[in-house]
Image (cartoon, rainbow, N blue to C red; front, top):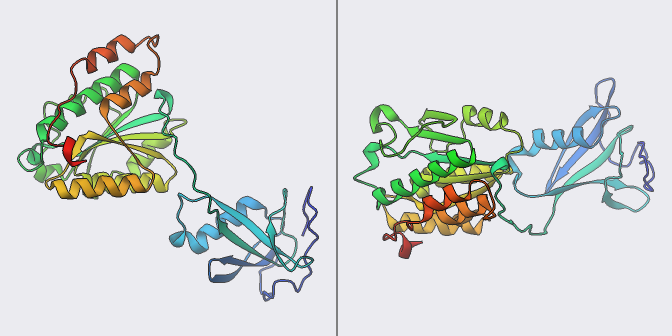
Length: 299
């Protein structure tokens, strides 16, 4: 194998113990992850990116995509795995492994309008009598959408089975939203939503609110985090039929590194400076505090 700017010597042809049944033009490689070891092959000259793709194809259903990983190769000289050398390219059979980093990465929770999208989840008419403090979260949700319009932040809205559960409530003004999408899946992360996100350059954060906290909100948040997107759940704009379900969902999500926050905190973080040209407009939105409903004591 060839390795640019690397002190690790090439492995001998017998270093991995992998059989030599690879197609012409490819090289046998043993891919190791956790307790597993699966022989496969890659094109001659394959580098880091192709190795990562192969790991994903072999072990994708077992990888926590929120973790950071390092690729290592087995070096005969040392008799153990070493970090993959810079510029590494496969030229003969070898053994590589994927190692999850144990370092806990701190979620900073910074929000900027240019890298943020708002997700409004299933704020529909048929939920009105069932969801606790639904009128309060409608009020706060409308405030968030007004802030999004002022700051030019894209908004994606979903409606769970609208044929049976109705459309988004009339109090929520959907003027200017990027996408309103019906769904049957609980998570908002649908192919159309992923395509819409791909059209927005530099998306790093999603501000998520709606119903129900322990179902659609929770599943959406976990899927987004799995795709490397930071999630901010607006506690005063999300609820469930059961306050116990809501409470434990928020606790679980917070433990995974998802940020549980409030509408005022989100809007002021997005403005960030009293000299921001839109500060006065946002200030007018929050002059009246959000409703201090029964949600407060149940977070």
